[in-house]
Image 1 (cartoon, rainbow, N blue to C red):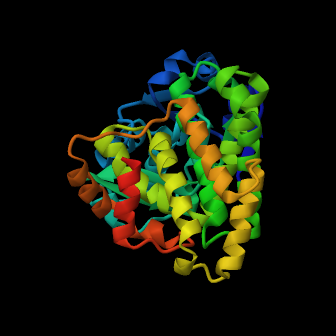
Image 2 (image 1 turned 90 degrees about the vertical axis):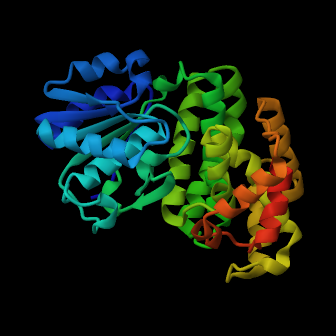
Length: 368
C-alpha cells in the first residue's frame, strides 16, 4: 500500500483520525527529548487509546537501544508505533517495527528481514533526512554503522507538520537543511538515478535554494513548510538511489569530531563535486561523461548558478555564511589515515566517478 503523506501546518491533529482508522489499541510512542517542548505534545496525550513512551536511545542509536524498544513494545502489548522526532528517532521506530516480528533469542541483524503487520506513523520534527519516507535506517552495533533496509519499514503515514520547526535550534535547522540539500544533490548524480528520483531531487534542491534564507534567518512559516517538503523529497530521492561519496566520507567525521551529520556531509560535498569535475576519466556511470556533465549543469542551474564550478563556490559561500566550519585536528596526518580507512565502499559504488583511495586521502586533507 502506498504511503500516505499529510502536509501542512497543524496537520499533527490528524493523528487521531489515523490511529482510529488503523484500529490501534495501544501505542508505543518513540520520541526524543524535544517531545516535551513540542506544540503537538498535548494532541498526542489526548489520543483515545493508551500509549507507552520510549525515549531511551542516543542520538546515534545503538542496537542495544533498539532491543530495549522491542522488549517494551512486546511486554506492553502494543500494536502500533508513532515516531515523533528527528531522523534517528524515526530510524529507531522503524527498527523496532522490523525486529518485533523476529526471534528475540537471536541477533536481529543476523536474521532474515520480514514484513510485520505493525502500523507505523512518523512525524518528523526536523527538516533533514526525509527518513519518514524511506526504507532505510541507521543504527550502530559494536561501534560500527549498520544500514538497515527493507520495504516494510517505510511508515504507513508521514505527517509533515511544519509548526514543529518553529522552536528548532538554529544550528540544528542549518545542519538538517544541509543534509536534505546534500541528499538531493547526491541522488541526482547517482549512478542509480531514475526519472522519478531526479524529479524528487530537482524539487528538493529548488525548494531549498528558494527558501533557505527565510527559513534560517526569518523563521518564516511558509518557508518552513517548503523546506520540510524539500527534505521529504530528498528522502524519497535517496530511497530510490541511495547516497554517494560525500555521505560515505561523512560518517567518521561525525564520530571523530562530534559533528552533526548534516554538517559533516556538507563540508565533504563541495570537495567531492570538484574532484568529479576535474577527473572525468574516472567516470563509471554507464551513461557516460556527457550525461554526467549535463547532470552537473542541471544541478547548478537549480542552485541558480551559471556553471557547476560556480555552484560549488556558491555552496562553499553558503557554508561560510552559516558558520559551518571544518574541523582542525591536532594530529591531522593520523586522523586522515583513520578517515580514509573508514569509507564505506558500498556508498562509493553509487558515485558516478571512481575515487581511488589515495585521492580520498587528498580530499580529506582539504576537508580537515
